[in-house]
Length: 197
Image 1 (cartoon, helix red, strand yellow):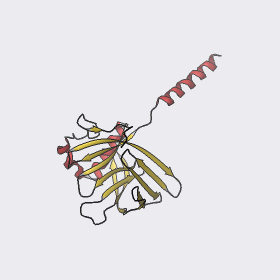
Image 2 (cartoon, one colour):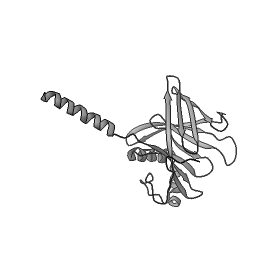
Image 3 (spheres, one colour):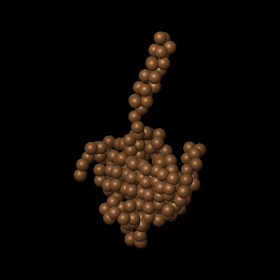
Image 4 (cartoon, one colour):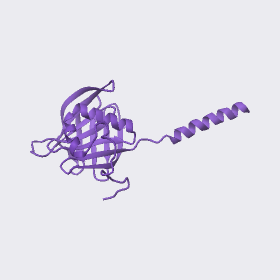
């Protein structure tokens, strides 16, 4: 009987711990240096994966982004623009091989730039994080994937500073402290999860 109780107690403890562990929530940290503004927009991510295709969808209260690519050829990705319903310009730019915290990352960079002077964006993807960084090609504006998992958010910032060190030029305007870029400050705008347009 004691053995049964011990097993039941151990099972209950494991079940309680498993239920108590909360999944990370994600959001875009949107930085607009032209307005000296930082906003946090809640984000839902859907990922579907097969042997021949990865589909990643990012949903926020304001927008959605849909990416499609073959995991064996990530340099041939596509982006479906939600407003026009077809593939737009989405060109592979380069592969960055970097090391952060003694871990090697392969980062793929894509561009939507189509020759227009002040339009276009660069999108960065890695297998571990998905699309984690979007930057305007002309303005110093950024979308940075962040999480309620502080360690993951810090790591994303360290990776970004490796692949796009120019982002540090915005720190003074935004009152960012090196190493604490992921921390929400009182003057930042936080969009609630249930926000409706």
